[in-house]
Image 1: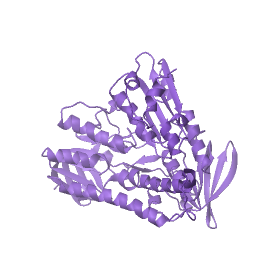
Image 2: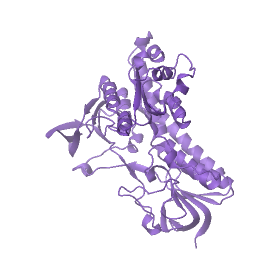
Image 3: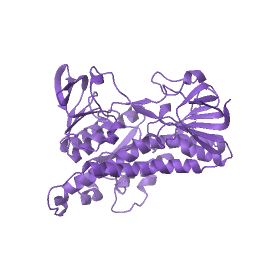
Image 4: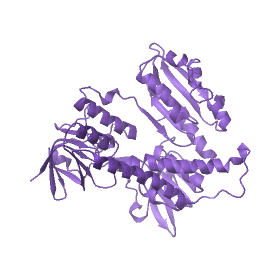
Length: 456
């Protein structure tokens, strides 16, 4: 016989625990099912551990540049990968434990360990246990995509998950994929001391960005000695002695690249293939993402999908916003929709990229009359003072409505400064609201009104 709950939540990524907290406080009897570590991708193999590694890489880079600031460091800069990993583990493990403790402290909330699988629309199996729930929320996340490259089964490779266990310095790290995940690992391991090669199938890095952003990112990485192959694909992998050899094809010509370690960073795959969704009648798209409406409801009444598995965002902040949308509709009588969300995200190389709204291309393709503003980071006093002047900021505005359509800040503090523009866009305020605002000097944000005051 199945144990009945008012709600069952599968997975403890960014959306799950917060939703459990709201439901349990509202008096619902809640089951939270987790098969692995609490916290999902962000806490365990994504944002928190990778940004801890990025911080160590930044410290290594800053120490190597100490002379530029008039600071003398006696002797060579040393990299202790075991200590770097240990620091990263403390950050990640602490967050995971805190989430588990929080969940276990919630009233009316039961933690069930194991893999959940639908046996019917309102019923789940977790091992031998049966769970029936009036409402079921799927928050199972995604994992690295492993491509069917000939020879891949005969070699060892890394993903964003398995690389978290690395406590040594790879002599030569080859990364397949020149987008957000791949580039963060590329720069951090180059700064730790590895030789790094990036292979990207598109004609430029991070191809969803505008060309000027992609070109500037490439320049930043190549300045640090990262080798980049664009419009290139890996067509074969083999083990040769102690090395991995990748066959790389570019414009019809093939060459071999030998490396010590291989990182796959070419995409993500939703963790939906073992959920038994067919038994519940839940519809997925051809890539395995669960199809939802603007309220994050699936096609089956009483079942929702939140986070990476619904294909509506691949970020921690979008997953958390999914929770906010579901909670607002179910508990607050507030009709919030995922379609109200403005696209915003960051690329955490150094300097970072902060992005919001449309790209220039998207704005042009929309047919709107537009104005554009741009400032190099060499004109930003804060960047000059820090000796970190690579990059630029730019913004696109609708000429008629004076609303900001999108912006990019590639430069020191760009991941924080972008929120000035994000807030104005959510407020649906004209760009003149920012031009009239007084910002603190010296900051990166203070150049945003200046840039907006010189639109053309």
